[in-house]
Image (cartoon, rainbow, N blue to C red; front, top):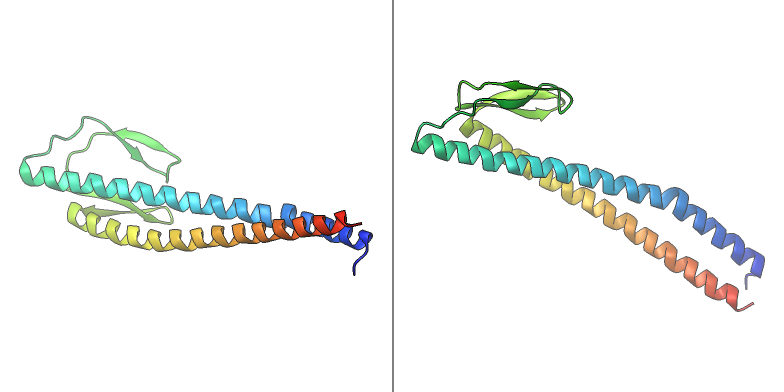
Length: 152
């Protein structure tokens, strides 16, 4: 049977582990999941916009906006531009690269990107759940050690 000092030492060890290891891991896992969710939401919005453009192009000549905001540097540098065509779009494909697509090609690419990001999001959500379970089990162990300590 452990003595009081051993229990206190184990409680401190678990507390340090939770605060120095698990909590930062949980914060990091949540942040990366949130970043992936944001990217997925942006691609879903883009898909809706592309489908709307395709629908409007099929029905009538789409009225182009006077000025649009253009991303020149992966959300770092923007400028205003006047579009002259509604059948071509540039889509960020990763690593700071943008590729010219027709609307149909853009829809196909964005669909594949959304599927890919869905898989990544599931992995990241699983990681968050795993770390949350570790935090919960460590909290349970600390509670049990605390009960054991009260017996003295």
